[in-house]
Image 1 (cartoon, rainbow, N blue to C red):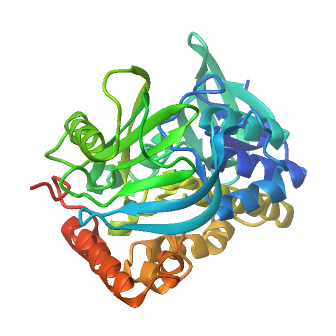
Image 2 (cartoon, rainbow, N blue to C red; image 1 turned 180 degrees about the vertical axis):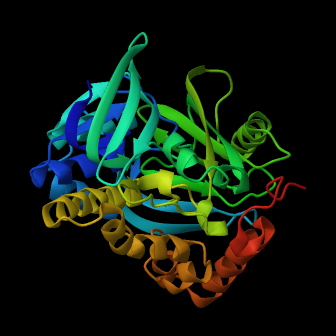
Length: 385
């Protein structure tokens, strides 16, 4: 016999937790299905931009001290260019420990959580969705609800079932994150982004919880391991990354930038897709802000639809359109220099600089973007020389 809920949320990340919180506040009986035990590791920098902090504060309250990383304050995105110039883009954000952060959000959502449970398949009808799951060592679990919210990440199995051809049409990248217990001259409290396409389309590094964390992505024709080696060598030569040391963690995942090809997926009649699963991810790989926003929108749309007897998917697609448009703007690179509602407002970083420095940094930025293939995103091989 199936367990009955008003809403099932697949995925225990920020999008799933935000959706669950909205459902609970709207009086729905909801269930989060998470395939791992919480807290689980996640290949994510754990940066909260101002929009994320505002959403969390408004709907979940103050972030607990044990969820915040050390240092907790994120002052800026610091862009490093091959010319040796740097540009600080103010953020006023925070660093969090991603595993504990997700766990806290899910607990604070106020709904039931089934950890270690994998959604295997689903059947959508005119008025319900039945989800077949396995829990623990293979225990079968069938759950039925009036709405299914898919927040199961960029490689979403639910999206792949809804639109099977989409997966093959996306350009996939291999992402790799390594944390090392070694000293580095990178200034703490900043997210250091390196506009060095000869290394990786999007290499970044930062100091967090006493470790130096390095992140790279590799396009087709390259490997994440090779990109990581090139990045490590750069940081050793120019940024004081220490030799030896202990590797504290090594995590990887696959990433696709759906916006560059217009391949968003927001679901169907009773299935709402939120967060990275839908394609809401900006060029720098920051997705928490869109996850929190779209998850909240999905939960509110579910509440409203069930209350008014309307089709949830129709309401959701209308309400999430602003997030889709905002994500598209992030890939129109002129928006960064114009400051048009982008996550990283380059214009603010340029504002206080002398005119000559602004011109040079704009030239650096445009050169980097051109090397990646312009608005279409990184070319295969990541622009490697």
